[in-house]
Every structure is written in C-alpha cells, then in structure tokens.
Length: 506
Ligand code: NG6
Ligand code: CA
Image: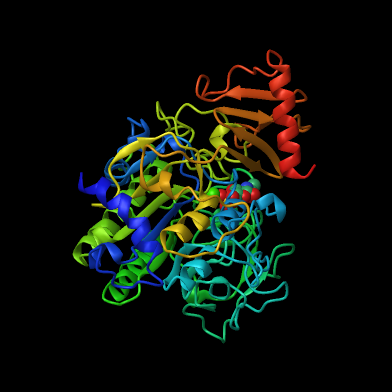
C-alpha cells in the first residue's frame, strides 16, 4: 500500500522540486530526489539470471533486484553489440543515426561534447555523476597520447568522475583511466598503442604461442598481457597494467568508495556501474573459479552477482537503500565462444543464456538486444513483473521526468510510469540494431527486413537474422521466432515495413 501511495505522489513531488523546495504537502523524504545507480552488464543474456528462469546457475543478488523490484520481460538494449547500445543509453539517440559500431580501443570519442547526455541532464537536475567500469565509446582524438591527459572522455560529456577501462577487457590499452589520466603510469615507460601493426620486438600470440595462458579461437592474437592475447598492439606502461582476475574487485572498491563518499552529501548522485562480465576474456577471481561448474563464463556471472550483493550491502550500510533507484540491464545478448577457448560451449550443459529466445549477440533475432531489465527502489517501487516494452535509450527522458528536468531527446521516450509501476504501459514501437542492420518492433510483432549476408556467424555460432525474405514474428506467441508469419499477413507486413522505413528515413 505504501509503495503505491509513494508512487503516485513522487513524480508530482519531484516535478515541483525546482519551484517549491520543501513543500509542506509532502514529506521531506519523498521530496528528495533519489540517487540513481545504473548497473550495466556486458553480454549478459536474458536467460542468464535465475529470476528469468535459469535453473543451472544461481544469481541470488540479481534475483533480489528482480523480485524486489520490477522485472521486465520486454526490456531492450538498443543494439546487439556494446558501443551502439551504450551510445543510445547515454545520449538518448538511436545508434544507427550515428553509425555507431564496435570501436577499437584506439578510437576517438564518439559522443560529441555538444550533445545532450543522460549524465548532463542529471547534472542539470542537481546530481553528482560518475561512471565506473567499461567505457567503449572512444576517447580523446585520433592522434591522442595515452601518456598525457586524455580528452574528451566521459568527464567532458557529463560525468563528474570517471574510472574506466577504455574499451573492452579484450582490447588494449589494458590500463585503468581515472578522470582522463592513466592510473599508475610511469612516464619513463610510455604506453604506445597501435591497432594495425605491432611494435618491433613485442611478443604476439602468433609469434609466441608458448606465452599464452588463454588460447585464442578467432581474433585476439595480437599483444599478450597477463598471458592473455588481446585485440590491438601495446607497448610499455608496465606499471599501469591491470590485473584481470582483480578487475571485479577493483571496480567494486571504487564503486563502494564513491557511494560512501556521496552518501552524506546534500546532492543526490547518479552512478553508472558498467561491469565487465561476462564479456571475454572471462577471468574470475580465484574465489569464484570452478564455482559454477560451467567454466569461466558461469564463474564470472557468479562473481558479478556477488558484486551486486556488495553494492546492495553498501547502500544499506550507508542508509540510502530506500533513497536509491537501481536500473539493472545488459548492453547486448549472450555469446558463448566470443574468441577464446574458455570452455563456455563445452560446459554450458542445460543452461540457456538466451532464455529461449533466438539468436544472441550480433543478431537481429530477439536474443541480440532483448536483455535482463530491472528497476528496483526499495520502499517505493512495488515488486512486480512487467511486459511493457522499454529500452535503455528511454532512461534519458524518463529520468528527466523523475528528476523534474525539462530536457528531452527525440528518440528517447518518457516511460517513467512503466519504470516505476509494473502495470503501466511502455513504448509502442522500437527500432533495434545489430551490426549496422535494423529491425522494427511494434507491439508483440517484430519485422526483420531482408538482408543479404550469411545467415550464421559460424565462429560464434549465432544466427544473425539475415534472410532474403522479409520476416515477421509474433514474439508473444512465438518467442523463439520459429514461425515467420509475413507471408500469411501481407497487408500487415507491408504496413509495418512502410512505418519502419519512414522512421528509419529510408
Ligand atoms: C568483436 C570481438 C569480440 C568482442 C566484440 C565486442 C573479435 C574476433 N571479436 O570484434 O571478441 O570483443 O568485438 O563486444 O575480435 S562488445 O560487447 O563490446 O560489443
Ligand atoms: Ca557487450
């Protein structure tokens, strides 16, 4: 009862925040803007958490969010890969407008410093903002020097504080960057990065297979760091190299200290905790090795779940659990073999990371962008399950509505009602992206226009969604997309295609 009551008055209370601070009609606590934590996993599938039906793996802390908050059965990333999804989540703009694709670690900053962003919007609503974890949206300029201050980066697009890895765990540079500076760098051992050619005398996985502890399957045969062959070539920066097995603990420590530091402050905070699991290379801390029985992929999911438990514990200890909205999601769907031999395929057993959906990472089929999506706000959000269509891109306009900001971006939709209450509606339609191709979700239907190209990426063993024929599926009746109903519904197919083309500007 209390939750529903809160829910009805909070948006109003918050909307009046700017002009009627300390209004006498609502209590001080309700009038306070909540802290917001966006937990963003990397490659976690819809079916990877037990709250979404997984039985072979236990994720009690992710389940605590799902069962204590709203668990969305139609929650989406904007894309089936990382950079485009993150671009959309942080800018509220469809990634295909920008041609956003997976970036090399040397890429310049993708988001313009002139663009509106989620953290900028929240800053203007009085928030302190931070990102801790994976970035993968480019940094600095084309000819940046990793040994100098790197700009623009997260700090130039709205994050007051940043502690990041530049791209992915499998890409160089394998160092942490704090507010634009490489952490622990010895200037006498400068970092050099090249994505085209190696530095003379530096070992690669091709020349020195004996130095490799984790074997590469496809790609990932350039520089070797900590026995793991990576994408891209790197020289120098020895004192700054990260320890892969300690990465989860390392980011968690930064997260805890950020929260502790912020919790006593007057201003609310917005923290983006972009976790690296279960993206490759999967390097669980020894505490988690062998714990899932599924090899490193399962082990790092357990590790990530533990981190979320620690996050919740920290909020409780600081007394801010009831004043913090958590949004939990993943940047794209799952993949087993993403370029290393790590037994993900061999040890998967009966676990289905896709949760019965078709495709996976890189795919235009549903498992590409259909991901875990949870909102949790103890004491305010009443627990429930929602089938509302929501997308990470909607965070910008929705959180603007929550925090009383007038800011909005055209592609983002205000679905705040759905994010806070399980019985509210979300979007009616959404364009989804996968490696430059796009599809159109409308209600329960999804239309995939014809695309040339191979049907399956054999290296990762994922169906990509390409077909010479137009595809139409009803995801409610046929979540695993087995029955193409386009031919049986020519009028509907034609109409949806026309809508899609109009929205895409084709
Ligand atoms: C691919 C990598 C893959 C992963 C992906 C990015 C190869 C052969 N494959 O190019 O391992 O790094 O990029 O993943 O290099 S994402 O989640 O950041 O989009
Ligand atoms: Ca990803």
